[in-house]
Amino acid sequence: MTPNITESLAASKTEFYQDLEEQVQAVVDGQRNWVTNLANTSALIYHGLRAVTGKPINWVGFYLLDQDHASSSSTTPRKDSLILGPFQGKVACTTIEFGRGVCGTAAQENRTLLVKDVHEFPGHIACDAASNSEIVVPLELDGRVIGVIDLDCEVVEGFDEVDQAGLEKVAKILVQTCDWRGVV
Image 1 (tube, rainbow, N blue to C red):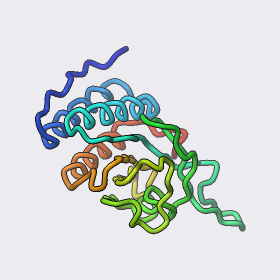
Image 2: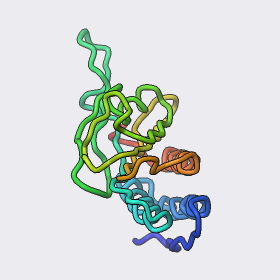
Image 3: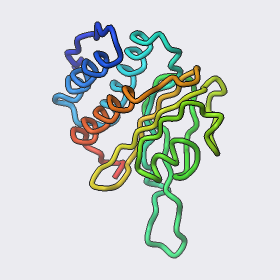
Image 4: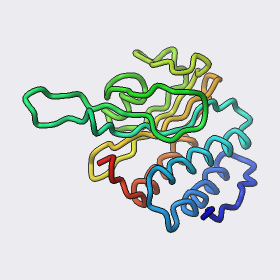
């Protein structure tokens, strides 16, 4: 079944994110599978944001809590890590430890990171050398980070507070509407 999605005709980023909320709601309507919903959401963001801003957004996707490496109560504690999920863009890093790079730091600190110049971010992981700015929004379920939304742009200052507010709303919709079996 193909979701009934109306293409955004937004003239601004603010309008785009208003349309995106409706589009994501349409994607998740009647579909709780997180893989399906994250794949469609990454496509909506990637193509829509590129169209409305004209900026070279080069990667949009998700990293999710890697259950094979999640912290446990064993005598040898393991560091939580993220594993690559659905995305749009070039081949990406497959695993990222909490606390490493922008994604790992956002996950560890459970807060959105808006990085205007990735070359100024200590420990930035360059999955694509063309990326110059990044925004990462945590996906939080029951007080625990289960993943992140990650966007990269080829220009410095590719993202701003409008992106942050819009993506944080998308994150909440996805967390509330998906069945996270296999992730948590």
